[in-house]
Image 1 (cartoon, rainbow, N blue to C red):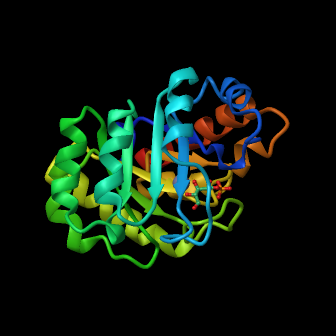
Image 2 (cartoon, rainbow, N blue to C red; image 1 turned 180 degrees about the horizontal axis):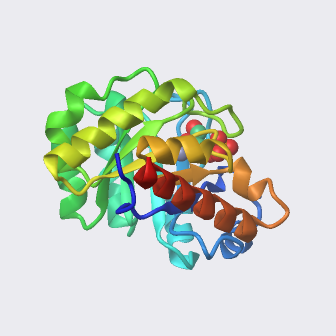
Length: 230
Ligand code: DX5
Ligand code: ZN
């Protein structure tokens, strides 16, 4: 399948940044498409990060849009408040939502793009009929909770099936991947059909996060081109 029509976006995750210097850490990735903000509640996932007050402050000082990834329970109650705080996109886990279609509509009504995330063990097929209701599908390529884990190649067929469904139905839905994205694994994820790439350690773990973003973007675009030739 040709991917030459896709736009390749790199969204660094501030989970791997220095939490004491977040404003400066944002300035280091100003050439990224958006900043990925991981919100964890130590309930939906076994880790705890930041909540709404900190995210609201990040929104005020960030030079680029915020892409918030909510790894929290009771998400139907919380997610709309993140949309109200001016997020470019708000992504909820479908496993944590009681009413995902209602929630996606609420997020859009509040001016945010609606993202829906799937854990690695959650199949995509039950959700293909609601693609029209969302702007982004996040296919987790690690079990959520921690940065620095290895990319799960076993997710590649799921990315391919999701891309085929998006192209087949003609909807405008981005496919995001999150977890273990490096200059090497981005090639396979992009070839499979993902077009928004979250990278934490492969950006903030490098001497120059800005250079790392450009390398990741170049490889993503390369893989889209390879797919067009084959
Ligand atoms: C994991 C988070 C990711 C994490 C990715 O649960 O959702 O966004 O920051 O980190 P890396 O890129 O290091 O796997
Ligand atoms: Zn994330």
